Image (tube, rainbow, N blue to C red; front, side):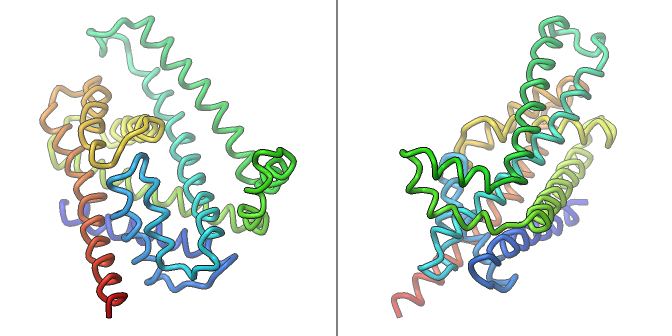
Amino acid sequence: MFWVVLLLMVLNWGVEARKWQVSLKQVERMSWWRAFKATLTGVAFAINTPNRIGEYGGRILYVHEGNRIKAVSLTLVGSMSQFLVTMLLGCGGLIFLLSIPDSAKPLLNAGSYRFWIQLMLYIVSALSILGLVIYFRLDWLVKLFDKVPPFSKLASYIGVVEELRFFILLRIFSLSLTRYLIFISQYILMVKLMHVDVTVWQAFWLISVIFLVMAVVPTIALAEIGIRGKVSMEIFGLLSINNIGILAASVGIWAINLAIPALMGSLLILRIKIFKNK
């Protein structure tokens, strides 16, 4: 089971590389292998930056200089699609939390618990709908930027996203969904490996809430391990008392999906530096 999780890590970042390759076609043709190396390099840059914003800097090392600003705009489109998938599936997770009987949450104030979960569900649902409209009509966003004086200069840089037609945006979105399902499958396998007593269905929706919380909480990847562990114990703790197993699964997923790819990306950065020095 552990080896399957490791193989899914490669597939996870492979799909992300394919997503970036598809996005980048508007400005530059790139092989999947080059896109994969760029993705790993981005992870190495991201691990020390808030909300992994350094990822963009790592990826554009593999893009020709004249296309780098445009490439960042297209990378943001891919990140937006991933965030939308996280929010949409997170809504399902919040609905699942509301379906858990109050008797299963003896340490919680049932009324307060339901109020905050429902409020979060309404907010995330509204933002998801708005986000989908904006995502599939990015040309509106570019025109809005062009009309607002403080942001009009940015319009020339992000104008490339207008060239992304509905089919391409749908393809990017489907790749984001695929990556999400791979990631959640890894987490479920780790939870089962650590003998956390929840069903696959329960684990799926609980993990979707964890992903939602982690997506909206500002953090640095290195510090994310502690926050993710705390969030996981709080959410899985609704149905399981195996805190050690929950924490171990959370730390394991962080190490496999971030620490190992970051190490691989660091080796690629070192290789780039060596070739530049030569």
